[in-house]
Length: 140
Image (cartoon, rainbow, N blue to C red; front, side, top):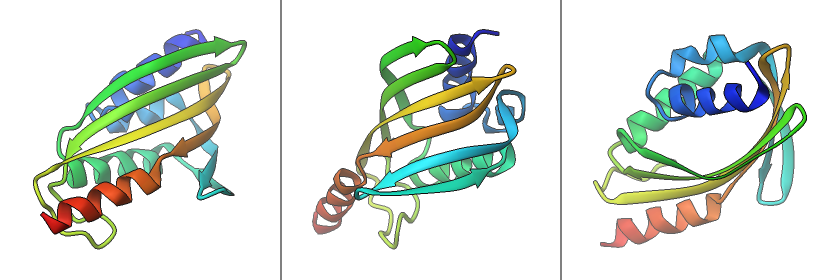
């Protein structure tokens, strides 16, 4: 599969929550995950199982969310994706009790592919926007 096909399949199956365990087919045994949180960069080592568990936690928190790819670009072995995720707050999130109200996540990532596997990615998520929504929903 091409890098484009791998990342599209990753979003269709894994990141969407439809089949998180399919991460074992699309991700290397160890993936470098570079994350930007409030302008602080950190890198964690993820396994396909870790990532699948992370997606399952999102499903527990936001139910069967909708995932819309808004931008998708390929340059060699790197693929850029920007997406919008719309879920319903049905599970505890960072100490916020469920409200059954919608929560929207806007995020983007660049995935690097080697030997038909995701081996590294750089991700940015509008965490402040999510926190603002959770606070607003709590007040209602």
